[in-house]
Image (cartoon, rainbow, N blue to C red):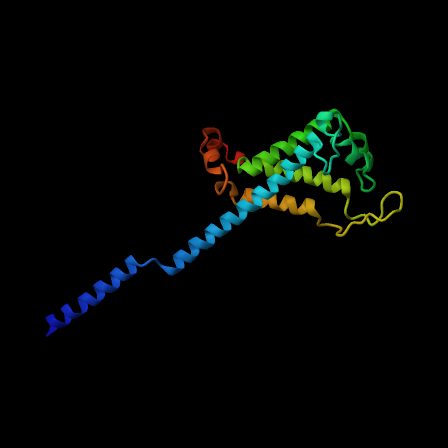
Length: 206
């Protein structure tokens, strides 16, 4: 009787073990699906944010008729910083920005920053240095527009809608988010970039 009970229980235990192994765990599948969705969402955010910088470079370089009028691009002899910095009308750095407006070194530094950040973030490489450079650039642009001001130097309304958080802050947060999460590995060249010997030895370049 004891032997019979043992043989009766054994198949039940055996079948239960096989079912657990052969069937995919629901929780694990859901976790993998959520991870994949997050990875693609962050990759999409990365590509869109990178294209913001890349498009700004292209428009200012070739005068595509959007923010930069046709025939007034950098390649046409126009300055990508003179109009913007020269028209700063509020904030503690107003006179400094006026002095910088149209300077050769300012134009080159600004355009190289737009190109480098745009290419790196869109491609998913060098996200950490790109995020640092992009945040610095956006901070300067935030100071130039100076959202806290309700009125400009001539007394006219500044049309600021928020004294602290504007699109510069949102773009900076997006850059930091994609760099912190390694968003270049999905829909990007982040994995290949991370395998380069110099990148393996200097993690800050990722």
